[in-house]
Length: 413
Image 1 (tube, rainbow, N blue to C red):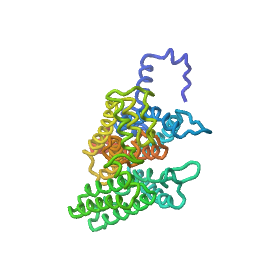
Image 2 (image 1 turned 60 degrees about the horizontal axis):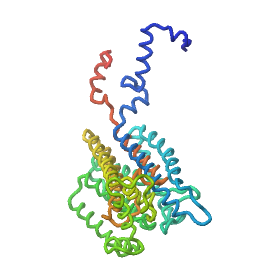
Image 3 (image 1 turned 180 degrees about the horizontal axis):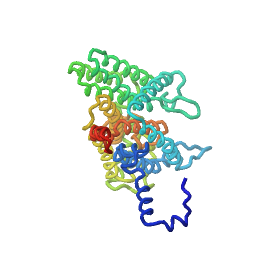
Image 4 (image 1 turned 60 degrees about the vertical axis):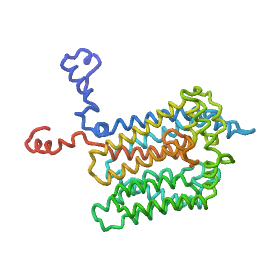
């Protein structure tokens, strides 16, 4: 234990001062081999920075949209705080960030095991939703009392990793029925999602499955049958799923009670290129879900189309960054798992922005890290933590064999 007093430190020699400074600068430096330092240097810090930028934008956007939702949900007896959802979003981020950081520190094997166990757990919860779930706006998607969670949100990222794990078995044994198993898993999830009903989430799960079977190098016949099955499912949803019928008809023909997409498009374009200014939006008060599904339109009204374009560029940069990270990857499971996670994140963002641009019918889907939501935020932090864990790279990996030789010879690498 050091007995150095402040007086001793003040009068120590220049050499000791230099050594003390060098020791301090070595913390989290490349010479530091502590667990925290290794995690810091292996982590994709660019990807993490892009996620943090999205979260910061989300806080600003929720603050802009919160007054519209608070006014809509207030009544003669209860008046909600205009910034209620902004305060709640800060709380969800405070809860989600530790999940992201802790999960990102897991080795790949442990991250995979965690995802598989969570997939089984949330699949069971998804099956319980029709029995004991809570209904909101006519949809039974949540489970719990007081504090509710949406199992499908948590299931998305862990499903992508579990599906990648199943399909990666094909490399070890081509005779294994991995396609059939993946179809059973995806079909089961889709069935329970449509019972809620939740067509948007079903499309995301099927999209992840389709991208991964393409990546698995399956035959053109299987891929063709998958495309035909997907189109048949959409046609069936149109004829037998009343909400889908109404929203598609409204999107095509316009007008009607469910013309939410038209409201969103008018709100989005009302601000022009530079927007009306923070807090100056008026069209947002006409939106049914300004803080969640249509927050992209609120951004357009108050901050302009240029801000919306900037958000789209950030999502594109995240996808490109992940793909660049995979260029040096050789493990089949890692490639497929990371691709599945990126498909979920990018696909959800594209669908949300397309709905607000009146390019898709309303899907009830949030904009990742930007829209308000407790289950959504924590689930996205979980998925991002898994993504960061799977894309970590050892900066000394290419030198490892030389390091071993040097260590055998008694030399430091």
